[in-house]
Length: 337
Image (cartoon, rainbow, N blue to C red):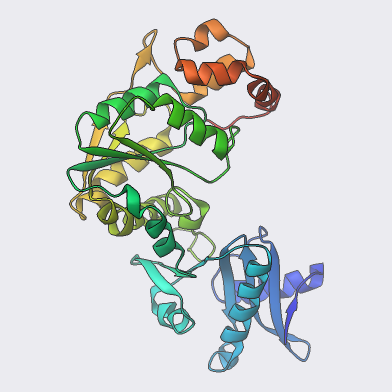
């Protein structure tokens, strides 16, 4: 019988089981489940939003129905919370076990396999079928926290080099500007560019879904692996669907992580015959324009400075009542992105 593990003692039993399998026990989860044999915890698994993780079964119970019971309860829990598709990361040698329960491999990395249940990627692509256009197409993936003249320059310059440019706005809400606002500002700020199409990434680019960690060894290069999985997912599934053969990025003078991501992009996407095109960042007063500079100016309500950093559509939002409400949150916001 599958039960929810609530108490600290139960969590410690789960930790011991997880760590005995060489995995890391992570505290961030929405639900932690377990199966007992008497007083002994023989299996555990957790759900963090729509990602299943830390599925561990004691070796003498692995040949039975325990995995199916755990997955069934995790799926039911996720469906009850409103999710329709689910992800799991596992080591490549365990991939077939999950495929037996209708999980489909999305990315096969030499250290990790990403699988999905619910055909979410297929449905995501089908929803955008009408946006597909043949030709020499490109892509930009942006967060836009918020949309700046730098973003506008990158998109406009990229669009001039392709037949159709797809701008993917990161859906995941880990930024001070909510997705709906970021998406709206990108659309408004590029409305005059006829060959630019704006769409969201869903769970399939620069998302926590594409960043596994709990089963990696301490000496594994987590950051590099996260980036590779994200880019393989793009190169294998998203780019072919939209006929994308170029991905555009700007130079990054500030953020080391973004620079590493750019270097990794060149290497990984080349294996899918996708060219990575790096464009020089637009500057203002000899400094690269960035969303970070915009947020710092907004904290000080330096609207004269902002006129040199953001398009009129973004500036109008920042001056609006909705924009003023976000300014208060900025005082405690420290992330560069």
